[in-house]
Length: 299
Length: 260
Image 1: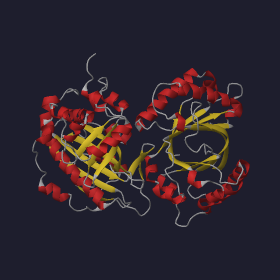
Image 2: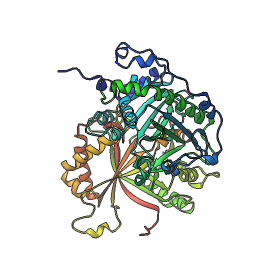
Image 3: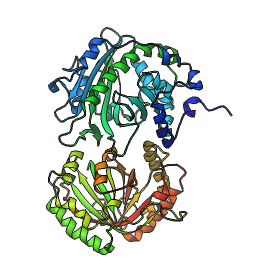
Image 4: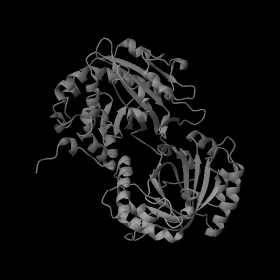
């Protein structure tokens, strides 16, 4: 009988995975098997730092009047720019808001769709994305079966799948369960879902809690939206929005914060900064890794 | 009904089940009607009988007795908070100590997922279905997740096992009038303050309570047939030794007549 492929062999049960995240959170050196993986070289390579002007825009909160509520997500399908494309702050109801925009001259929608599926299959694939702060990823057995099901188009493969990631968004290592949704289930108006206003999408809702979870640790919800459209000068424009403190209830965004409570500044700013750094790195290495591994999931 | 709170309690020491059920229906229920606040719907499910664990267990692994499960539904989570934690404590929120063994409550914030049934109305007298989905026997099935199973697989494996169990249990297939999965909401993870208030120590966590409606207590055997078929499925998702079910009588406390 043939040996089990690594993409399946790494599967853990929930209890084992949860325990393992405390170890992963320390970002140990690659083990012997990981070091032999054909994409291991990306773990150790140098990568560009974000544009200081871009980082500066994430330093202080922006005016709430420039932000959109999650119920206004369809504004992202309008031509042109919204009032805030880069910045963070709080909505008047206390929710955290993040907007970010990246331009990737050498990235295509096909690369984006492939990446969001490919990277889920083992820790190292997630770690090479942003080694300083990405510690690991796990799927459930059911999620893995869907991700490896070649009968489903790549751009739909993540719909209904939960990525269990371990990462540091500048507030310490957290376990974040990110459940991906179709754009329709996320709430977009599909009658407007077309080029040139949108090329592809990756988004859903997440629940984040510290890896060192105690009885009174807060498990924080957020809505996550990565929407991509063609850029007039070539390549692709990536627009990120986070609404922290929101979850989906019966398919609609719902604020979960108790009255008078706002998402801490450090959490919103921390995620905003993390987003700028991880996607600066992503835009740099995605075309290269796609050239080597694109078009397939097994390596 | 976007969100509801389901609290399974047992009577405080010194009360009989009849005294407890009389108290919560006629006194506690009346207080709740007078202080409705943002409650959409409030029903009490008075326990008639039930079973904890499996025949293979030598002893109960958790507190096994339950005398009622109350269900409070709210339009939004925010309105749930405003009702359950008002600036000035409500009489209802302070009344629990007089009838319940509060530190052993099992409290679940849940969201509903309707499960299709083959025969929502009786064949012999469809008039019994005039009040849609409501029957005389309501079974609350607390299914403890197997610790090793991811939540998303737990729900999907249950859905698959349920379909197979119904196919293998013809009496249940014919008699089950309504079925709802009440899935635990992750907001529940942040209930440390409530647990501290009730002096609850490491309460069991149930990720799902499945509610079944049958016409009368006469159909309790249909649920047993279904349960045996459900537990015979291979898919891993449940810790049956820490799961339990309750046969109950539904007592509406606050429920508006549907507008349409």
